[in-house]
Figure 1: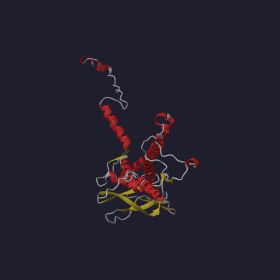
Figure 2: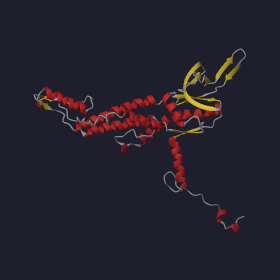
Figure 3: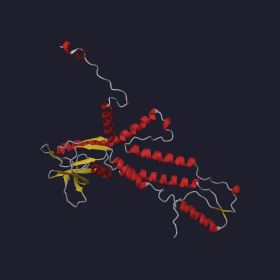
Figure 4: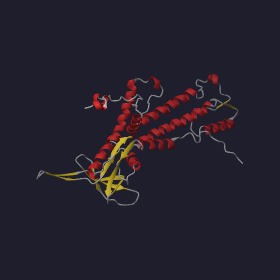
Length: 328
């Protein structure tokens, strides 16, 4: 029985799928909704917004639904499509819904007629663009760096130059290196024994520990940059975090807050639209604000502020200090 040689890089070179689902789970928890109809799960709503940049909420017979929207009809005064048709995998034809108010002006009479919308278009951000394309680009970069780290680690365990006896031995070495690096072309070199290194103007060394460390810094900085683009706080300077000055930290935080606010604001506008069109009392806050509120309540319950300091107690009034019989 032939035993298959294990390749340490076969299952380690690529990490795209793992990172993709990791970030997908993360962004779908960035916002917390309250008051949504029971037919609209929060995770479905957030998945639609991150996947398509927008989604439609409509009502039929007292039941609410959300789904992908195919916009149609004419443009309104702000160049937005006035109508949209829900696209669902259940095969139902839900028909057209008005997602923008229609304004019809009669210049002869000077009267303005308004046809109110009967559905709501929720937006992921101001530009109504999905999150996933950005996610895919950065994860592809991270996947590439991850593979480079694996190859560099394999090269640390090898010599850079080999002296071989003949072409057959050279071919065998090249095959071994190809298996070692999982078919990824690297800068490992195989030479014939007739090669004279003293006459060579360029003899490269094998990858070092510093090379691997630099690749890891690259990976962590791209990882942090992606989190910042998504509105998740992360340190962009992984090479010198202990020496970051206050202005650098504040700049990172401002960038993160703006990215998060772009998505949060549009969801809050959506809550206002749901109230106007359907009378629904919905609310959305960022997960991070939600956590702060929970932590603040937890600290308050034990008599501490968020920094762990004792809460200041209100001083009793003069009447509270007097014996009961002396109070008027």
